[in-house]
Image (tube, rainbow, N blue to C red; front, side, top):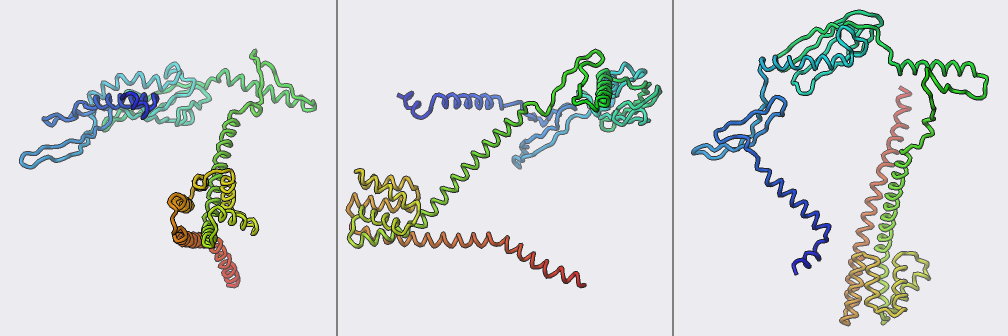
Length: 402
């Protein structure tokens, strides 16, 4: 029995999701009781140098006074000079290897060096300074055209601890990369062919260079996946635009119906007061709209309701459908009065409709007042622009004549 009730309330998929969430929450709750940051004796363990500072929230119980909350920032542990010296001995080979950046040694540097500010696993802040930037740039690029020697100053810092290293670099002319050589040869070959075939109809690019085969592809004629993305964005924009248009059309329809509703209600009161029944009153209201050629969505809905009544549907059902299609509170109240009159046979329908008409006309005047205020706000920008133009027309001649 309980299983059937649960199935009515939740689907199987929802139950699985709820069970997973509850399980994760339970595990997180059970694991949340970690070891306290502060012991009963008031001892807090600092984090190691590579960890973050510790923020501890605690309550100090003071005898005869009570409990006092405190937020304490516990800085991570600082390394001693002895620890830093030992760590530097381990760090130096790593630093030198990274600095050489693939070169064999300091005595034979033929390529760019690497300047960096930190080594993972070590606390030092590192800075490199080239003593001669005509040979080695400030970023470690080898600029030397001839063989020679220059010094790179390497500084390691940690708090007050500091160590400087003079790395003496024996540099040689930078070796050209084989790929760079081939690219340069291809560039020269293309320039040569282009110059020699200046009178030919076609330019025939080289198929090989230094034993390497070459193929060509026009990058501007590749299938660009960005087009698909733009297409997707366009579809999304169209969807949003159409939704916006539909919403705007619905608002416009609602405004037209609300604007015409008090007039229809007044006509209904007039025809009922003259002794006409409800069905004939609806028909007469629709015929009046045809004669006066008044176009309004409300009359279209009235026509649909009349057609439903002609097919044999009950008046109460027709009024309910009429109210649901329009879905406006004032129309819902109106049809409720008509349905109630059909069920109970109330004799004071006209009086109730007169009260509803008064409310409808008051609402119409309120909407007209709001529309007027909005129109005034929209005219504010053009008026300001006109004021600026007038000020320019007045002030420019005055400044010219000064």
